[in-house]
Image 1: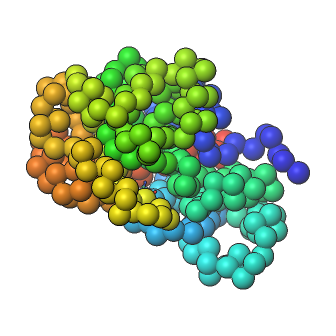
Image 2: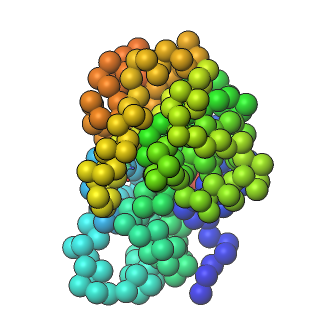
Length: 310
Ligand code: CP
Ligand code: NVA
């Protein structure tokens, strides 16, 4: 039976704006604490066990969560989903019931967002979305933290997405009304972000503008973002790549953004496809800080889900 008191971290749209902002504030605290001599949060989650069950490959999410868990004093277990009995047909709900008896929280990377929801509906522990086909909330929390470090509050700023209307784009849409910034997305007509996520965010006063003209989205933007043209599990990637050719982020596009604009990419990147080498390895790119901040923000997400005070 669904336990509504649990704090899952699955969609930004379902979490209060004040909680999301507090998580980012806490992430800054935890980042500073890690580099301090006292390191007072090193036992915050001691004696807890946190599992990570992944159906898809991962470098950043897996490593940053595993290190985050260890730095909070908890122990981590990595479970490739296909090597559990899920791979032999055990149901998602039975797996959720059983794992809830062993571990205190779980991070799931899932090919089907509906499986993630089914797991959460049957779990008695917090479930954190480590990427699904529909969204990637931990990534956008790290991105907003990075924006704050480089530029300041994201409220009222112009954020531009240029490329595929994928899971990462969907999560930026969910974030726009929670953090109150303007989001301009340039995507090919056939590769628009989720209609239901866009409509829901617009209804809540999200300032979301869709276009198929990159220059329109990027003009005077404070931040330019793109992502791979072929996400994990995508079909018909050759057609997608053809449609996305005019959406490559290059120096000409960066020149029309605000002069102080930053460039973000969740990685992994494909230089020469969605972004040129000169942009991703150039002065406006903040990709390494963005990747690092996954570690800090995810500690704050774990603490929020588990009701631990930072
Ligand atoms: N950005 C991100 O989630 O990277 P991984 O797929 O390597 O985890
Ligand atoms: N959109 C990409 C993000 C990878 C972190 C994918 O889903 O593969």
